[in-house]
Length: 464
Ligand code: PHE
Image (cartoon, rainbow, N blue to C red; front, side, top):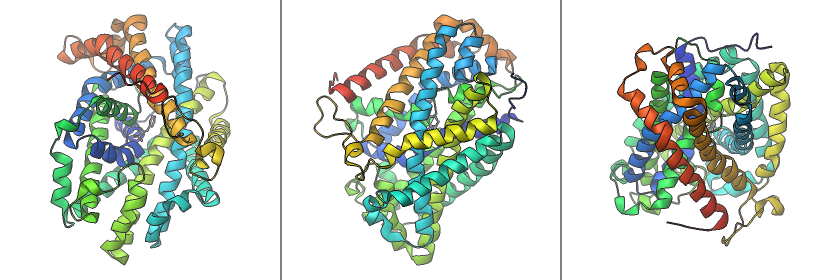
């Protein structure tokens, strides 16, 4: 059955694909406004601490489970001899499907903006609400995006996922570096950068802290088995520790560059008054087009077009990894051919995303989908799916994953897998740290964050 699942052709191929999964809308769309809401550099510092101290051990664990078993997230727990734990893989697959269903909608918006701005339609910024409610149009962009994702995944691991990442990731880095350099030349760039890089520790409160953790977790694609899946295609000769370190550095590095690019733009639009710029998820879609327009008709199209192309590419390498999870499951466990599984699953997830697509005003029902306990305003379907799929299920998955590795599968087995490809691992400081983190630090912090998120988000109970 497991005859020809495919594999990454090189360590670099795996790192690029996993970094592609990590680098996405989370880095470029969400990170800058989380920073703005959370005290500038104070948030950045917390985010980096979470990435390296807490998320990195979880990433190593996920990759090790995948590589040890060469299986999808459900099959992996069965292959390790703990079939009862396969529910954790199922939660992960569910989370991945939920995330992809809304992620594809936002990715479609970004792709549509790339086309609009490239053709010089800068007015789109002021018409964002009409734009996302033009269901025929954004629906079409969403379909195109899902087809591109499915096309890559249908070509398999080395011929599809790895190949696409090898093209998209270097291009993405090139574009972001160009845009950072350009944005630093704008008037008021300095005010933007100092807003970004001077920490305001007084802004930090508990919700900022757990936003930073949630952001780090989502951004590194953890807690849902994406890295178990990618890890299952990794060679036994590869060093998991150095791969995970490079993926983490790449992800945090791109998020950092995204901030360096966005804050000068925000300062430019507001003539230096960054704090007055409208924050929130609409920032990129409503405010930036105006900034591009004022750069000039031709240069504005180029800079703006490149910006939304960057966003689309970043999103694409992430949607690829999100689709790969259920596809690998279907190939391994249900014995379905990859080329068939891909299109059926992609269609299914696209359909699941339709309520999210129409939940920004078009459908009254999905726009006012649910009102949480203690909340004044209803939450729309897209946000609801995001709250369940990423904010709730990912920390839960991370918590259970580390509990499993430390107390069920056991640390010496995890170590043994890491030692393949890194024989000198035993006795190193990093071994001791991962031991401590996986056994105590991660389960404790992720467990607490999970509980507090559920209480505050859905029940309006703020303990801190
Ligand atoms: N890491 C991606 C981002 O930052 C999102 C993602 C989450 C992708 C989980 C795969 C799995 O946008």
